[in-house]
Amino acid sequence: MEQPNKNIKLVSNKNSRVILPNILTLVGVCIGLSSIKFAFDGKFELSIIAVIVAGIIDGLDGRIARLIKGTSKVGKELDSLTDVISFGVAPAFIMYFWSLSEIGRLGWLISLIYVICVALRLARFNVNSEGESSWRDNFFEGIPSPAGGILVLMPLIYSFSEIQFFNVNNNTIVPILFITISILLISKIPTYSLKKIVVPRSATIFLLLVVVLYFGLILIYTFNTLIISGMLYLLMIPISAAHYLIINKNSKIKNDNIDHHEDVL
Image 1 (tube, helix red, strand yellow):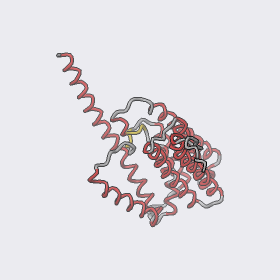
Image 2 (cartoon, rainbow, N blue to C red):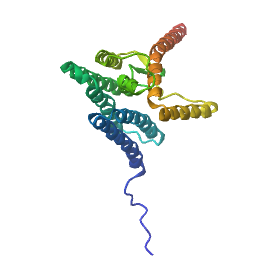
Image 3 (cartoon, one colour):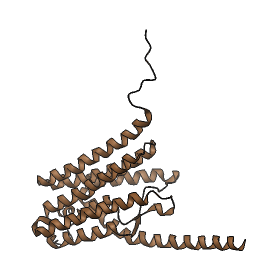
Image 4 (cartoon, rainbow, N blue to C red):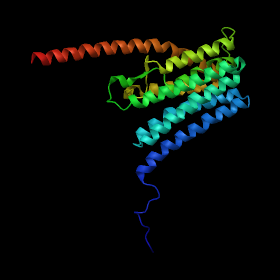
């Protein structure tokens, strides 16, 4: 009986490691684009959920790529393109269909400004990420695009939630929120990055419990949980900025002491 040629492979192991994360990224693109279709059909609840799912995929594809050693330049650029679509174009269209269209051309201009800021933020991130790693990798410059995409949806999410603190004038709040988030996206305000946080083995079970609990709340109290999460994230921005300044100050003092010691020697 003829033995199969073991040297013949349809896809090499290296290529398969690269392809898998990229497929996941492309799924995120499809979901992001689908959110626009849902909004166009007036199914705004589904459009919100689609953006959230795209955000989850965006958080997973890079980690999976690094875990299986399948990172590539193509994957990096594809991920940025996906972010522009899912967290720039999609939220802009969703909010335009829901509210911004009511203020005419100004609403469309605000949508364009937001998408441009998302693109600029991602371009800056790609350039800065090519430098040497340091403690600064634990922080983003400005808020990341997935957070920005969800934050601009907050008035829409608020309208579906059971948390109704006050009546919202969307013709005023939505444009102000869009401009504010656009500025935060391209700002250099340090915000926490969770990409390189190392969790101690002793805390793994506790972390898994928290993650499961959070996603359980998302499934049961979707819009309420998202509103509270958005508020907490906004409160974390000044905290992360203050934390960055403290670390940066201590780092400068440490470097000055090292330089002084070398001069003495």
